[in-house]
Length: 72
Picture (cartoon, helix red, strand yellow):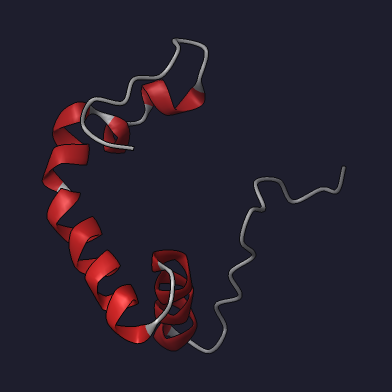
């Protein structure tokens, strides 16, 4: 995703301020830094983000790809 990414009006992300073109442009430097760290570590940006969460607090349990508390 980048500042040019748009979402259909029925897409939930179209209502979130963090997905506006301005917000995505402002966060680009952070995304690029995360990618550079991942490259240096031989990891993906997602792996670095998960490692950061795990190091933040011992009680945080990230569940990648989960969007709902209930099962299918």
